[in-house]
Amino acid sequence: MTVSHAYADLGVDVDDGAGSRARGGAQRPPRLLLTLLGDYWWQRTEPLPSAALVALLAEFGVSDSAARAALSRLTRNKLLVTSRRGRRTFVSLSDRAAQILDEGARHIFSFGRASRCWDGTWSLLAFSIPEHNRSVRDALRKQLRWLGFAPLYDGLWLAPRDQISEVVALLADLDVTTATTFRATVAPGIGPDGLPQRAWDLDDVCARYEEFIEFARRLHDQALAGRMSPVEALVARTRLMDEWRAFPGLDPDLPAELLPQAWPRAAARDLFIATYDLLGPLAAHRVRQIIARYSGELAARAAYHSSELTTTAADEVTAHSSRS
Image (cartoon, helix red, strand yellow):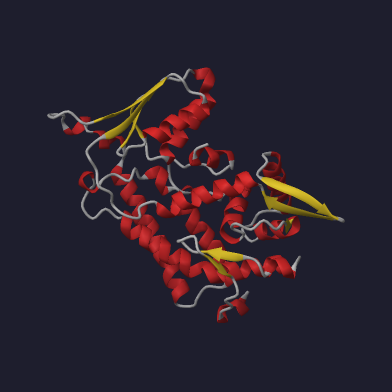
C-alpha cells in the first residue's frame, strides 16, 4: 500500500487545494486525533484511556460526542484498538495505523529538504476510468497529487521525477488496469503553452507559501519571545503541521531550472522546521497535563518528536507552563 493510499484510509485527506486555515475550516476529529497521536504518542504501544483522548480533542473545540464518534470510526476502520479494564475503555493505535503514520511523517518532513538533480525526463500516466468507478478515479487523483503529479490534460498526469514504480504500485493497489505509464522528454520547439510545468499554477503555489511563511513566522516570534502558553503551543503546533502537510499535494517539487527565481519553498520549510521544533516542549507538556488527569504513569511517557523524528521526553517545564 502506498503512503498516499494509506493516508486516505486513515481519513487524512490529501489536499489538492488550500490548507485548512485558508479554507476557514478545522481538521475533522478523526484526522486531528491521528495527528496528535502521531506527534505525542509516536511509536508507543501502551493503550491510553479513551477519556484522555476525548479531553485532548476538547482542546481544539471538539465536543465529547464528536470525539467519541471519531474514536468509534477509527476503531471500525481498524486504525485504533480498544480494550476494557473494569469500567474504563483504553485505546491504542493498530500496527497498520502506526506504520502508516511513520511513513507519512517521513514523507512530510523530507519534503523540500534539498534540490535534486534532474535529467529532463518526466513521469507520465494516462488513464481512463469510467464514471461508475468514480470513487476509484477520485482516489487515484488524490494519491497522484500526494506523489507530486498534476493533470496536464484530461486523463494525462505527469511529475518531474522518476516515480514509475510508485505509480505502478498505486495502480495495482487500486486495481486499475486501463492505464499506461511511461517516461518522456519534451520535444524541441514546443511553445510556452505546451510546456509540462504549466500543469501547475506556480503563482498560486508561491502565494500559498508566502501566506504560510507569514503565519509560521508569527508563531515562531511569539514562542521565541515567551508569549505562548502550553495550551496555545499545542493548538499552534498541530495547526502548523496541518498547513505544511498540504504542500506535498500542492507543490510538485519541480527542479530548480523550471521554477521562478526566489522560489519560497526552502524558506517556508526552514521556518516550519524551526517553529515545529520550538513548540515541541510546550505542546508536549500540555499533552502530559491532560493525560495526567487519567493516568500519571502514562502521562510521564508522552513525548514529542522533532522534525528529524527524534523523540524527546516531554519533561521540559518552562516558566510559561504555569499559565495553563
